Length: 319
Image 1 (cartoon, rainbow, N blue to C red):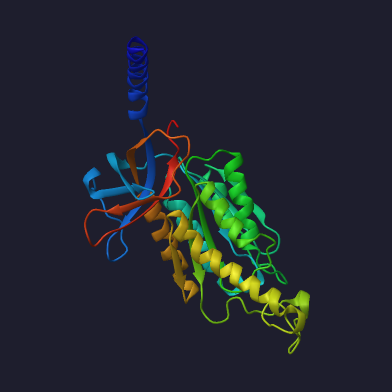
Image 2 (image 1 turned 180 degrees about the horizontal axis):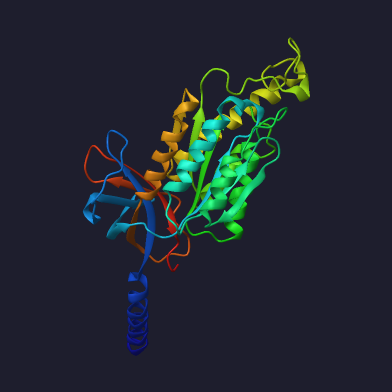
């Protein structure tokens, strides 16, 4: 009996020794992180001790920090509905300024969402063709916006291409949206695809409230894009809720930022700021225990006051 117990203890010891190294193994995971100071400007020259990373509330060791210089895949989504008619010239300038500011290795596409989403410039490195496409955008009379549909289709395209650094910049007016896409599902899709979303939203009076000829552009005619009446009430309310929630929540959930503009004359300057922020991202690499189930929540914060950090995972490690 004693010999049997001894044999069992030896066997258990061998198993524990064998399991010990495996249990202690760790993998490297990475976050693309934007750090801003109190004025909203990017912060340079940060290192590992400046960042705090937690997975499901458990702090992880930050191994190294470097500038995120990997090529990006960027989709510029622009409102080409009738509501954007007064802003279209500044939209062209803003798109052009953004394209010119990005690095030569970044692939960029342009998608319009006045009516059904349309590819105005396919993903390319060619700046000349992108600038030509940006300079040729126009608003389509009689069309409503379909921004949620455009975001959903773009996210699906990123997934199919297995984009490593997908970024979506949405240039929109405020108001109703006629998309068929569910807002909650879209937000989940954006997170799962690892897309960083930036939104620039025109909130001034007159945007999103233009008459739509397709619904009777004559004075006094009922316009379902801007009014609630009878059976349209619940649908119109949901359209507005979905659009507002998506434009507000998608940047918060994906490490991007929403910027509101009252005047469309500020679009060009704002798009330059968006480009500068994207180009200033850090790659924060940290150690995590090997696990079959990925963490539900990854949080990045700054170790000192006065700075804010927003990050998005850019790789799942070797799990």
